Image: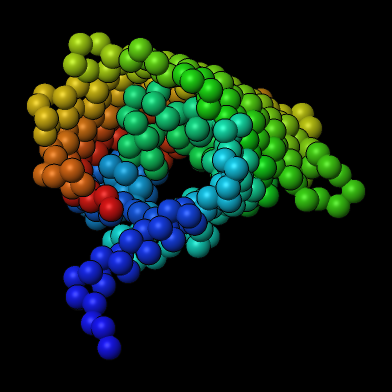
Length: 356
């Protein structure tokens, strides 16, 4: 009987496993963000809605929305891959899900040199347009006017537009088919959400397209989305963004506009301007500041809106962990917040974020 040295056996098994993995090229990645901070606000409640009083709270996702996700890919050969993404948002302070179990992403698709086609719940092209151009870099998502108003995460219209599964926002759509193609410095996206309504192909459906350029230290993007309600009321939205390096820092500019039919005779229009900058003081310390101006007009109502300033100071403890300090001020215009609430609001937050 011949004995094979232990080290040689282990090496042989390892090489066989690597060879098998190389042939299959199949992998699943578990990833996420854990973000919690202590927050004190005046004129805002714990959910950052306008309030008549002051609030002390422990907030989840102040810097970046807390989440847990699964991302997978399998090489099918011939340059074709199968891909999927499942992602849930979590309230880390209470251990509960934000809403649906996979509220942030739930899709499967095919990928090749021609691009990616995904089927399922996905972000709209408006939401994608904020990547690289939002002054806050998608920080403080529940309070960021670009995310909430310009990209329709909280449109305050009380009607479901597109197959979002919600009457409060249309940042992500169910039953969606989405194409993403990257060609050198250009990225093209096209998306269609199926309304799945009886006897109507247009009711509760949505379509959108976008074009983005990234190169030479600059990012530019333009997106358009068209959303229908179950009664075929229409919501049209546009979002444009530009960012560029200035010395060691980066400047950002965005503009979004949307107009929605809220009845057969009434419309609501929102316009959002965003300005901001990010500036690294050192390899560990980063400063972020943003200003947003939101103007709203509604049929039969006086124009209103608000101005908001948000600033972050982030100190990196490692590649995956940082501590942050955040400050914000909101000035409501023409009782946008409601006459019983304070005419302005302020907030201060201190927190820790870890990515994995």
